[in-house]
Image (cartoon, rainbow, N blue to C red; front, side):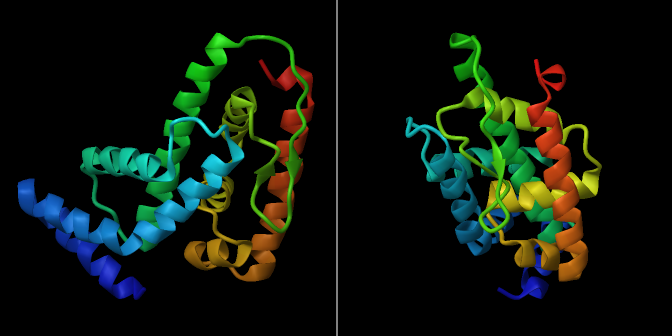
Length: 192
């Protein structure tokens, strides 16, 4: 998908309003739909097989992004906003699920190098909440890398390209992030 076409749509969308803006937005989402759905499917595979489906997650994120009424500068900016919206939706859902099942548990998160950020997340909405809290302690560029990998499902190379990083810089940043998240998730004093 040519980034230029996406950037043009984003530029048009920032100048439009009302129904015309929504149509342009629909066109943009249709171009990026497979990327968004891939991330939603990956994320939901880590969670319980409840009623939330990838299509529903993408559509909820779509509604939120449409409501933001902010201009998106380029493909990277849009995908980052989509990843953040998906993260927020999943955290809200995890909080609802978690509130019904408070209790003790052990963190069994592993930070995986080849797949995406955190595995063994399924069946543990509290862990997703803990991950969100840990992400809130990271720098914005670190959060961006995690969101692209974890919530959209990009490989390290794909995320590096979107962020304008070379592979070695992205790899180094990823190693730092994994260490920071592992420390936060392993330290009982850091979790609530």
